[in-house]
Image 1 (cartoon, rainbow, N blue to C red):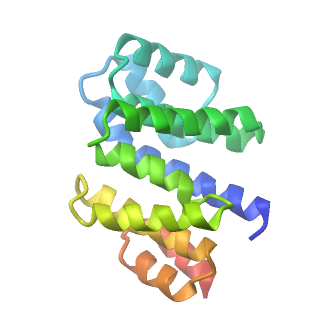
Image 2 (spheres, rainbow, N blue to C red):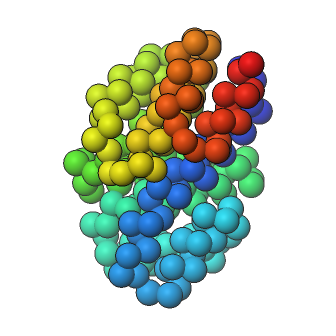
Image 3 (cartoon, one colour):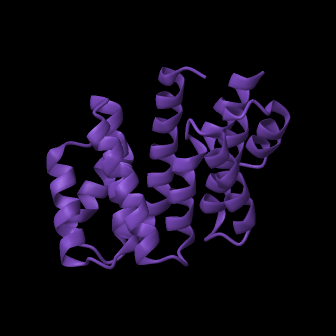
Length: 184
């Protein structure tokens, strides 16, 4: 798979992942954080958005959902700039989210999702195993759909079309339908 295709798929991951986390982040936060989270959901991330989310995380440094949202925001910034530093920050915040709450399915999905797009097949296999281990006990429909989508992406990146199609078919995300169509 070409680097450009992997980057485009990573963007899809970022947008879908962010939507999974944003609902949790929005609960009980101020209007400025709500607006920043909505900007991430809309793919309109700029430095002001990042600054708002980083300030919110600084005030609430144990909030795994904010760290996961920042991972998504930096992922969007990476897509916009193709700046490796942005991608590294996305990975760092995903790791931070997992460290903050290793029991959070959202944090687990974010960390494993990054591995689903890895150039390393062993990491993609680790993502598949980890996501399958989460099972359908994830935090509601969107998380289960995200899990299935990422399993499909890892299988597709491994060249396993049949397993990718099966996983995509188990996801209700629109992006999974598009990915499935791309495999036909």
